[in-house]
Length: 116
Image (cartoon, rainbow, N blue to C red; front, side, top):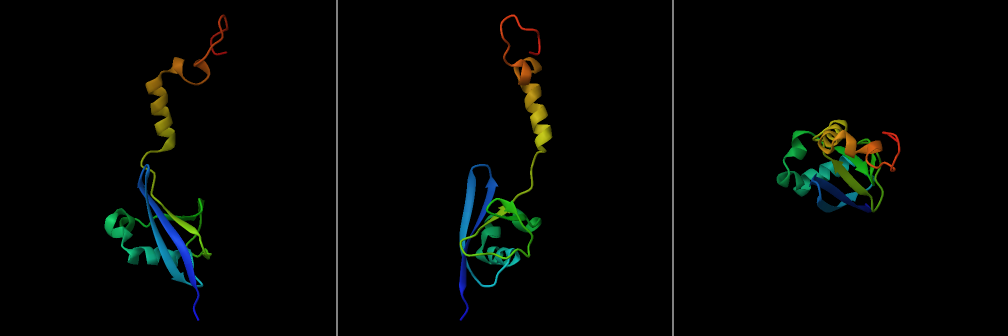
């Protein structure tokens, strides 16, 4: 008798949009088998970018390899690539806010030296 493993596969195509698919897989099963099942489930039909570049895989917020063994009730997450480098985004926000209104210079005590 082959036992079944229940996992949920989650993909967020954009901020605040989450698509979740519940799958039943045969045991033993690894993360690559879950990806195979996702392809068969039809999720890539809705989001073709999944097939263009295979996404990174994680379980419960931790990145794993394709050979990682899955357990019952695992949450398999498919990570999309970053669209903007976080360092560049932070620099752009800082420029928009202005140097005097951000960071150490945002709040000053009355009579204090600049930067303190």
